[in-house]
Image (tube, rainbow, N blue to C red; front, side, top):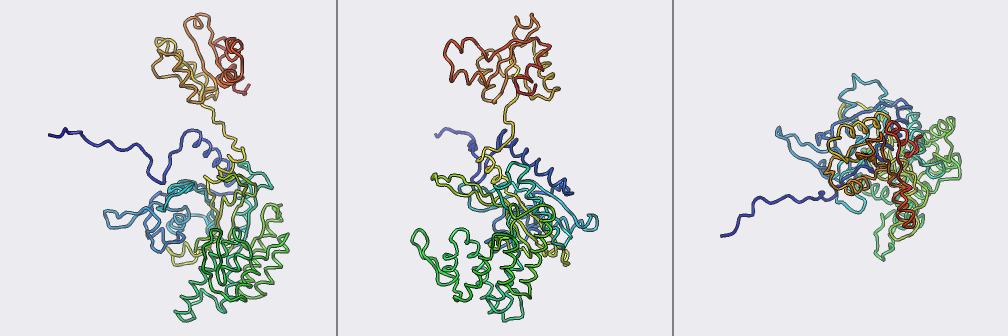
Length: 503
């Protein structure tokens, strides 16, 4: 008879596509988000926390490259038959809040939100199913001054967290300008229903393909985009990629738009006017960009920080006007040791029709979303993460009967604003206590045995200096214990402060 093995133990592993964050990482992220929140707060934005769960109906189907509302999200059917899902971004919940509380909120409503979002997509290197976003939005203002404010605030936030001027650029475009170009390409507005349904379907498919191709401009350049818009091209692997099928004249109109960027915002705007003409939705988009540039220049934000760039498209379908991206321009080494620019860390734009889904009335809105993990990675890559990741001071235990005195030492340190804890493991092996302190990345260990207590003294061990000496010094220097000092118990706080560089 087979022996009963009992219940199967669960596997101790993180689900695929998810990750765990430990002390220093969480502290680092919080410190960065606190700095961003302070910038948003100065601009008059209020914090908002929404539920992590929304109805699938409220979320809508705005994820890129998906066709069904519950594709790309973690969804389930509730007991009352409603389909619920984890939020996939922080914008869709804002649209629901703006509609639900429209009679209570001030208009325009400025809010910022920070928190995790979830996407039921195939994970890959650096691509997780749960990640953090940091958003700021203005709901209820049709003025492009709101878009300019978002761009200015984004530039301020990047500098506040440690990305200096010259290492980033906020790039701004306008979907209306792109629509004007497409009107010229197709001969009619591709979003206008006053054409045959068949023609509209064909044109919308082509429009989507054109947008995807434009988005590759940074990767394949002008000649590559020209090939992809027309007959197709061979990629780096030798595979042939079918083209969109535009004529040479149509492709040139798109390229004239894409290559409109000049050396200054003024030159870019002149080139865009030439590309889209003086009338229609394209000209309206250029006028909005011109106003944004003027508003930013008046506040001191020049083209060294915020630049008009026609190559910015943005993938989400709900954008209706200005769109923006923040790009980090410094170089890092990729996994193969090759230099490359770090790239985009934030994106957003105007989405005037999103709240309309709930109310039936158009409610203008604009906003930005920062990729928290990417921005943190950028700060680490440049050595600009300024978070103190040192662990707490550890008060060791030499005598269990004197636990109250050890706790009093830790309390004195905490009252002085110093992180401190008492070792709560088995105190028999003192070496294990120091190993614990090392694992906690503790800067200082406090030691008081019976002899020190009788003298009214404590021993302070500088663990960082001790580790350095152990690695570099001679045996005789190590034995002299230069990283260890005895101080009066009454001077504990002042001496620890000095060791931590706070004296």
